Length: 381
Image (cartoon, rainbow, N blue to C red; front, side, top):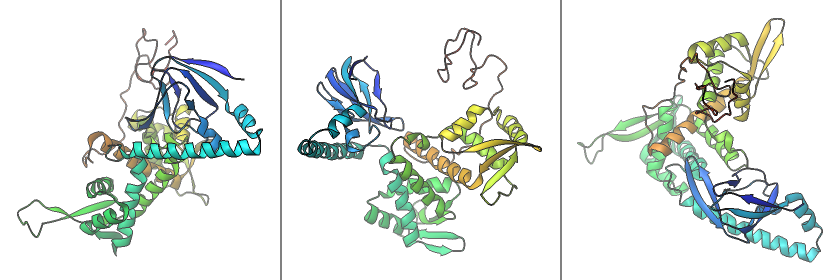
């Protein structure tokens, strides 16, 4: 059944990546549509009265391609998607053909507008370009590099020319992308003197990749989830999740996985390690956090006690992706790759007073909401 919805100024109508459950017919007010790319918001469109929001679901797109927020008080008619689909399917062949043609044309125009907006993204590493940037690194190294022992070496000048001609990738951005893997220990730069200017500072002459597969794993993972609706959470890093995964992987050293790739650890020892080294008390919510980020693990009881089980290679693969994602985030914030700002798990300060039950941040008795995560606190807190 159709209904009238009122949105206050600043209220969200829907978020990018959310599933479309209804279509909104704007009656009054103005709606701002935008893309979120890291901490940056990219303007997409201003919807005025008589605009339709969510119609793209009729063309087979199940999620919202952009977020929407009310610029002023907005009145809209909400039509359930299932009801509209039934109405659409119940029409004549001619009406359905005309409607489909109009929707397909609108879909193409929306895609063109989206592409134009995102191309103007001035971030050093724009989300819609990230997979291409690192694919350029990988393919340039594979096609123009040479195997020298366990490393893949390539003349950096040749690499930049190839990436620019084949992928239209800027040399500066390519250098910063490669610097991430230098920082993470998967590659190294060999500096040389400029033959034309002997007194000039040394410049990058060669790049040696000790783990070129890491580059491929990253851009394949990124392109799969970035362009798949509703999966943006898997491309956001979380320090707590990284610390837990780090602790699990460190605890797994010396433990052989079974034929299925599953490693089994003493749960009590893992809990003790996380507490001693990082001040982190492992809880059920932490397992939910890992699952939300794409990592599955479980606890299983037996006569020998409780074991922690997870697929070792998958944890290693995803953790490596997280490390690159963190560096991209810093790159977009700072404008360059800081080779000295390396991530390491930080031990949390032990707090003996009242704490938030959600994030364990310190709170005061007069707090109604946690100042760290916004969790609503009970009077007993």
